[in-house]
Length: 113
Length: 113
Image 1 (cartoon, chains in turn red, cyan):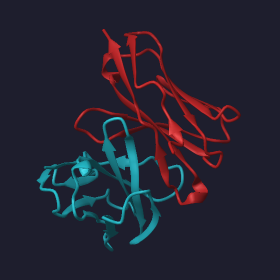
Image 2 (cartoon, rainbow over the protein chains, first blue to last red):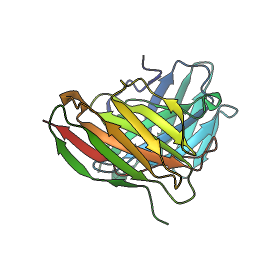
Image 3 (cartoon, chains in turn brown, purple):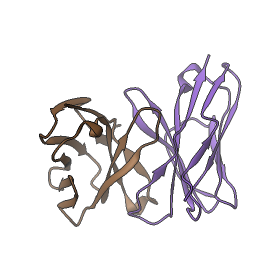
Image 4 (tube, chains in turn cyan, blue):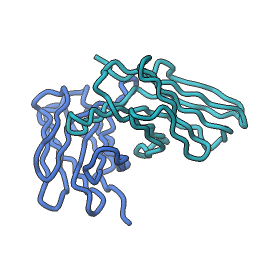
């Protein structure tokens, strides 16, 4: 049972344009969400997070949007750069569940120069 | 500040053998989580330890076990290895409170032949 889903396995975007990565979840108990970036042969790197009491969080070129009613979150990268090419994982936490983190299957982003 | 260290980086084992993987978290981090990454399956949660106690466990068979020592270092053991256990095993550490991003190690690539 995949509680966190990233339905697009891959995405290609031109350099300078916006990248939008999407994530859907089914467990209404999730109250904290994170995005990670992963390069080959490295562990995932934490990017940005959002609490369920917010609907938007911004950090430089990265913005995460949360739509609780739709159980959907998205990561916007503007402008996209070739160095952003990586696999992006969204993750969700049920803070009442001792922080068990559930990850999505990942979206491979390719930014074309 | 040293990151999360996982040893060994690569491992080749034969079916039926057992294996022990090691993870040294960031100094001061009390939570250590383990994940299995396989192509198409994303990051599957194995278990999480906090102050030597297992707080969470994923849906893996009993062949997968772990422990955490008083210095927060953690080990993961897989007994009676199967071909399907071939994966990248990632360890992540966190101070332990909700909302902290997890810091991942580079992983141990296990190949079962």
